[in-house]
Length: 161
Image (tube, rainbow, N blue to C red):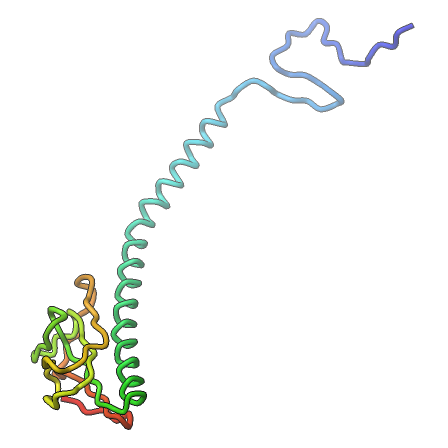
């Protein structure tokens, strides 16, 4: 004789999606909670996105400014190290075009690092040797100084003008 399985039989009941399998009641009909939760999750995501975009752009702006300040600092450290290593004066001057030094001390546009060969302090001459150039990528820096150039001597001391 074949053994029958003990599945619950629902007699005299209308099955509205309710079943009792292994003693657990389950409701299988849709009651709208899934779509409501989906809309709530979308609203929360949209709120976080709208609130986060301005903060992210400010974070990006701050990061760019920090990188450019770090780049100027790196150029100053590089000039100091090269002056000591080469035993020659190395000058860092403010530059707006990356080709000539400006006397205005407008460091926000960039700078040039060069070996001072011709002896004209702070002036990039034709015989001077350019070691490095830095050009600002945008309007992130507001760096203004009364110094047109910084010159590192062979012993590591600084000559400011």
